[in-house]
Every structure is written in structure tokens, then in C-alpha cells.
Length: 571
Image (cartoon, rainbow, N blue to C red; front, side, top):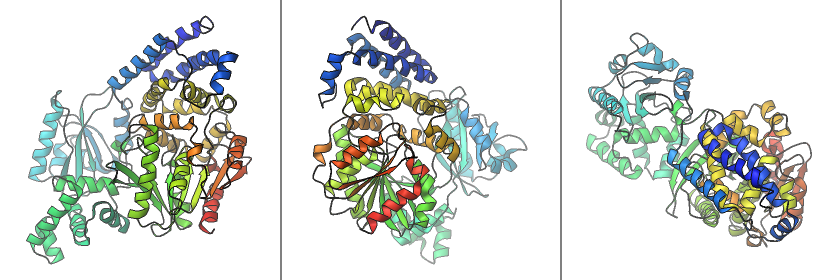
């Protein structure tokens, strides 16, 4: 067996370091590893022994090869996360908003459409400083000075008040791969709504009077002017401002403005991420577990509650795609971000991740006063949804599980998967110690200019899934899902990878909470027949097959998903 895999082993070692240096070669690395692991698993006796064991691992990996994987992972971690080359300047140019990119000496590099009338005359920040307060000019000069100092890379963004629209700007030092240090200035655009006010009350416990003060600060008014408008004393306004600062944790008024604008902003600002970032409103919550959790909301604020549990790579993309339908159907969708994804804190083990999401959903139900919400579990999110349904049976109406199934334990199940999903599952199932590198290398590709290649590796051009993506025009949303998955690193993905190949069924056996499994007959990752067998073993589960749909059932046939939610509401 050693000789059989020797050539492939050498190719794998070479490919490991090639993909570290050039993330766009990820697919070649995956091909080399697929050949290698397939050679090993082709040994009948070994395959039979591994297949009979429900525990992860069991496949012996050459210690030298394993050391290369570990070393390459460490290198990627030391290199850190990268911004796509030259992307920042182009995004500023393409922006319709008030956005300025300058060098530290004040020369304009690029400007968004709304800012060009201000800076087009001299192409200098001096055109902008005419519209800033005296203190704002000083702060901007200090920021530019910091940008000129190569060693001074730790800093906080500053908020500038203007006499034009937008009334507030946020300025920060920007680091762009392949470009010198620059200064990025953008308008703090936001839409103040009743939902925004409620978010401040729910998230931070602000009173209505304190919310009014925050709203007026956002409009650019001084404390004295706010006192005049509200017909209250300046002393009262000052105390309410101090209270709002204390409750939100903001050190000062500028920090408060920046925080609130970030939380209620529904615009895709150039520096908030890569193209395809969803526009849904999110909130950061301090949970009773001690963890911070990001929560998204969409749909009808007064509608029937639905708790959405995202998968490994989809993020909030399905909600972005369906938010209009949720609104029309009278559904209020709350989407807690699971540990290790988005901006939510990570945890130590896969079991901890499951435990935390159950506790966090329970807390959300109590905190938001949700009356028997329906759980919508998408792909890997449904796994966690099964635990929620078992543990919180008296608090949820049931779950709609889309494109999901039971644990993947047997060779026969894995062999039917699409190529890249198959090799990742083989690795998670039989060589789990190597999984972090695979995920981290994927993160590097997602961070690169070649994110389309990541989709290519998962769904080949011409496949049913790619035809759906192209037909519906959701490629950018899919990219947003990938970036969401790796926003905080690889811990969430690695955790899910481990859980998917563990036998977690005994922990949810005996659940009485109804679960509707919706599955596409052309799903290339979880075969419909596997999910049908899984549901047949559980009295609380029902299987619904949609023969012409694939893994992206939630995009292809959203009406059946919405219909299933209604079915659970009316039971």
C-alpha cells in the first residue's frame, strides 16, 4: 500500500505548498489529495474496517505528510487573511455613495459618485476639509499622519461631522494587497426606521427618550440643539447621552454614532466586505452564555416568528433572496449566527457549538417573546435544528429542513457525493486531523480575487447547480455565503465538518417535534434516497421529494419551503 500511494503522496506535498503560495491552485491540490486518499481507501480490508466504525479517524496518515499539512496550516495562519488585490480602489470607483480613497498626503486616489462634486476640483482632501469642523480637520490630519507611519497600524476609525450630506463621515486607515497604505473616508449612510429604534431598545435596553437623543445625534445636532428641539434641559440631555453611552459600551459620542450607523446600515459600503455582502440588518447580542452572537432579521417585524439556522456555506444568502416573500407571507425571520460563523464568537468543540446554539435559540425565544417559532434549517443548519427540536420541544412548532439529512457514516453514502464534497467528507470522516488545513486553504481562495474558482470546485460548470445559479443570477449571493462562512476564520466550518460525520442520531432520538424534510431529487451532496431512509426511521419526520430540484431547492422552489412553514404553523 505504501508504494501504491508514493507518487501521489509526493504530488500532495508539492500541491500543499503551491496552494499556500497561490490560493488559485486549490483545485489542483484537491485533485492530488483525492487521488491519494482514494488510493488508500481502495484497500478492501482497510475500507471494510473503517466502514464498520462509527467513530471518526482510523486511517493511518504518513507522519511526514501529516507534518506538512500542519506546517502549511501554521504558515497560512501566520500570513493572515488577505484583501483581494486592487479591489478596494475599484470598489470605491464603482460606488454610488459618498466614498473617498486618498494617500496619506491627502491626494485623492478614487472617489465614489456622490463625493466627486466635492473633490473633483483639486483631487485633494483640502476640498473636503472645508466642510469639516475644526476638530474634524485636526482628527483627519492626525489620521493621515498615522497612515504615513509604517509602524503605526493599530488605530481606531474616526467620525467626522460635516456641513453637507451626509452629516457624518467615517475615516480609517485602509490596507489593500499590492497597494500602499491609504485613507478611506465614507458617508455614514443609514435609514432610521421604527425597526432601528426597536433594535436599540431590544439590544441595549435604551429608553425611548435615550433613543430620541441618539437619533438627533445621528442627524448632526449638538446637545444644546437637541435640548431646544425636545424642550428639555441641556442637563437632562447630557445625562441621557451618558446613559446611552454606558448601555452601548461606546467610549464617546463619535463611537456611538459609528456603532449605531453600522448596526442599522442597510447599504453595502465598499469597505464592509467583498461584493455580494447581504444587506440584511444585523445586531450583536451579549448572550447569557457569555458569548457574543450576531443576529440577522428580515421579513414582517410583526409576523409569525421563524428561526433560521444557516448551513456551512450559505450564510444569509437565502434570506436575502427570499426576504420579499417572507414579508408578503407575514413571516418574521430571526437568524442567529452559529458559533464560529459571521461575527459570532467561536467555541472549543463541535459539541460545544451544538450546545451553544440550542441555548442561544432558547434565550432568543425568551428575550424576543417568540411564540412557538418554526425552525427553518438549511443544509447543515438542520443538524443543529434537530437538537433544538428535541431540547426545546415545548417552545417550537417544528422544523422545515431543506437539503439536509442524517449523519454521513458509510462509504456508500460518501461515494455518491459530488467530487469535492466527497473528498472533504472522506477527510472529515477518516482523517479529521487534516481537516483544518483543507478549510484554511479554502478560506485563502475565498479571500482571493478568484472566489469564482471556489464555486467551480464545488459545482462544476454545466452541472444542475451551476445552471440554477446562472439562471437565477445568485452567484454573488453564493459568494457572500462563502465569505460569511469564513468571516471569523475556519472554526465554524471545521466544527460542522466533524459533526456531519458523527453519529449524533441517538441524541435526538425520541423527539416528538414535527420535522418536514424537503429534498431535491438531483441533490449532488446528500442523495434524496439517503434522507428518505433517515426520515423513515423517525416517527416525527416527514419526507417531501421534489424530483427536478437539486441542492439549491430553497432558491429553485421557494414556494414549497414557504408552504411547509405554513403547514407547521397551522398544525
